[in-house]
Figure 1: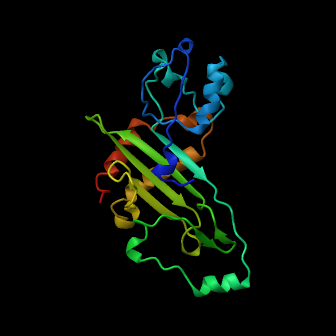
Figure 2: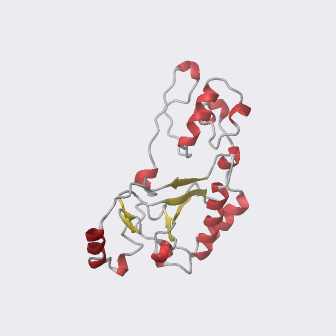
Length: 231
């Protein structure tokens, strides 16, 4: 699974009979996750909310019923992926890799190049490498628009097993071609730090805390930091 829109944003269709009193003909733009499926099914089956409060997901039933629409919903989520599928290689393959390094033009690094294969001491990864991502979607005060960001960390993907970072303003760059931390590292340092804090906070969450919305005060900090972080 890649940390980009084409892989992360998957449409979800929900259909129910009239007895369920679902909203009909509605496109819901608030985010839902795979983690939400189990709490939703238990909620539909009539189990009390306390019975699935320990789960990291949240029941989608409030989004489906007119009389239960929530006033507050999550405005961020974390995607974690552990890469795998390592190939084995012998001395000849090792030598060939050393003699024929992959050269990527410097001006393209962090901009148009997206990881497909990665080379490590264990071999060649035939899968997308391990990564963590936080997606944040915040309303712009005084407007009906949102500002959406994607912050991605690639552990051990850089030189000497350092961590590589990507940051995109998905609203302005929907195809995620311009890594702001490559083109504007100084101007975007504050925004990176704020999103990194939110990522670490959600990575260590439990239960309903994982679906909590970013507080208004933090939203303001993030939106203000984004003013100077642009192409």
